[in-house]
Structures are given as C-alpha cells and as structure tokens.
Amino acid sequence: DLRSLKAVVADRYKIGVGVDLDVLQNPEDVALIRRHFQILTPENCMKPQALHPAENVWRFEQADAFANFARSHGLELVGHCLVWAKDDRTDRWMMEEPDGRPVTRETLLRRIEAHVRTVVERYADVVTMWDVVNEAVADGGDDILRDSIYSRTAGVDFIVTAFRAARAADPDALLIYNDYNCHMPHKRRKLLALLRELKERGAPVDAYGMQGHLELGDNSLPQLRETFEELRKLGLKVVVSELDLDVVTRSRWWAEGGRYRAELARWDPYRHGLPPEIEQNALKQWIETFSLFEQYRDMIARISFWNLHDGQSWLNYFPWPRTNYPLLWDRQRRPKPAFDAVYRLLLGP
Ligand code: G3I
Image (cartoon, rainbow, N blue to C red):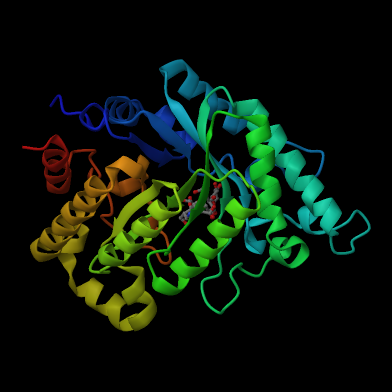
C-alpha cells in the first residue's frame, strides 16, 4: 500500500494529526504518521496546564520531546494551545494575585503576554501554526464570550493581547482562533461578531480553527457551509483542526442516557466491529464531509484528525467509556473503507 494522504493533497492544504507523546514511541504509529501527515498537534503536552504549573515554574520536558521528534523527522507542529479560555482548564495561580485576591486585569494580561511569549519563542522554529486562543465563545446565552476568569477580568482584551504577543514572537506563523460547534447558527453569529471585533481592533487573527468533532447523522454540513461562506467574506482562512466522527454518539448518550447504554449492550457486534448499516452511514458522512472541504479548499490551510486510529481516540472515554470508531484507521492500524473512500475522493477522477 503506497497511498499517502499528504502526497495526494500536497497542492491544496497541509494534512495533520493530533496525538499524545506516547504515540511517537510506537514504531507502527510513527510509520503511519510519517507516511500520511506533515504536521502534528501535541494533544495535551503544550497546553497551559501542562507547561506552566505556577507563575515562575515551567515543565517543558514533554513538549520539548515532542518538538524534537518533529524536528528530527522534518515535520511541522501546531502549537496547541496558548490560552484555553475556560476556568476548568486554568490553574488557580493564573486566576489569583499572590495574596489570594482575584487577579487584576493588569496582572492577567501581563501573565498572558509572558506565557505566550515564552512558549512561542521556544518552539517558533518548528511550530508553523498556533492555536492562540481556544474555546472562548459561549455555547448558550447572548454574551459572545464564555464566562471565565479571562472574560470577566479583561473582556475581549485577553484575546487581543494573546494574538499580538504571538505575532510579535513569531511573525511568520499562522495564528488561529480555535473553537467547536460554530456551524450552529447561534454560535456562528457569536464567532463572527468576535472575529470582526478582533479585526477592528487590529488583532492579527489569520484563521478560524474549526475543531470538527462531528457526530454520526448530525447534519452539520449545510450549516458548516454557511460558516465557511461568512469566513470567506471576512477574508479569513480555515483550518480543520480536530476532525473525527463520533459514531457511538455523545448526543444520544446525553439525550437518552441509560436507554442508549442498554441498546449498546445488546449490540454485541460493537465489540468486534460496527453494525454494517452504521458503518455505511459513517462512510457516507466521511465522503460528504471531504466533498465539502474540497469545495472550500482554496481557503483551507490544513486538515488535521484528532488522533490516529480508532483505538486511540478520546471518544473511547468521553463522555463515558465505550468502544468507538471515529477515525479512518482501525485498531490494528489498517485503513478502513472510509479511508479508501476519502482517498479516492481526494485523488479525483
Ligand atoms: O495522563 C493522565 C494519566 O496519568 C492519568 O492516570 C489519567 C487519569 O484520568 O489522566 C491522564 O490525563 C488525561 C489526558 O487526557 C491524557 O490522556 C486527562 O485526565 C484528560 O483530561 C485529558 O483529556 C484531554 C482533553 O483534551 C483535556 O485536556 C484529551 O486527551 C484531549 O483529546 C482533549 O482534546 C481537546 C482539545 O485539546 C480541545 N478541543 C477538544 C478536544 C477534545 O476534548
């Protein structure tokens, strides 16, 4: 099998994958990565909570090892992520003054600037794209920004500060605002309002990172098309940053809870593989998804999967433990029928 995703899309966009450091220690995984991908996203080890446990304490070991892997194999990295705008993804020290009072705006912005500068300078040689701010837009309600220490303390200025600091430290990298569910009209409106405001304020945002955590039968594609159209009007690029297709879906789990679990327990085939009709539907959705991407390829700078093969996916754990099938390679690292179909589509007539 000589097929290579990166060879087939070389004239269009970069193709990548998000993995944890342990994956880079497995020779089979490394072979797959080197054949198909040119850009890696560290799944966890460059996050603020992994790198920066206290104001003057840094833990670079894992991120350094990851970066060295990329350097030695001639691969690029996505720096993920410089600011994760959620309280439960933020260490306490970031939220407080040394005396324990809530952090002031001045201190918070200074800390963000220092964090961004330190991380970006360290990895600028190998990182070509940065997820500068992750998940700042509110899921519900009318406010654009999610409630967090960042939005409460500094409003949109924390995002402006992060982007300016990233640009100053690495003038050549693609700077991304990364988020999920922005195909949904209410969240799309907020995303676009945010991106417009950032542009007006002169914040150097180059691209929207569409995470792309899709679910079987979610009908997100027509809505996604509208999001892409709006981004085009704003002159922004798109990266598909965390693509996967949840087939044992979290939505049904949330909506139906125990009833869904009982149904899954009866589907013994889940232990050995997908029921054929679900596999068919998933394959169809993979094809539709990549057909849409092909239609917008002039504005897409990268497509990255979130994890390499079915056995590695975070969707085997979140939001409950199960056997899931969200990727293009199976647990034995064999290409699935969905891989064949996507590859054929990308290859063209
Ligand atoms: O490494 C520890 C291990 O030592 C410990 O025994 C175990 C017990 O829970 O936890 C392990 O850490 C987990 C880590 O993944 C590594 O597997 C963390 O608990 C767990 O919270 C962490 O989850 C990650 C999650 O982000 C939160 O940071 C997922 O791997 C990662 O796939 C996920 O990725 C996010 C993106 O960053 C942003 N977009 C959404 C995406 C999916 O949630």
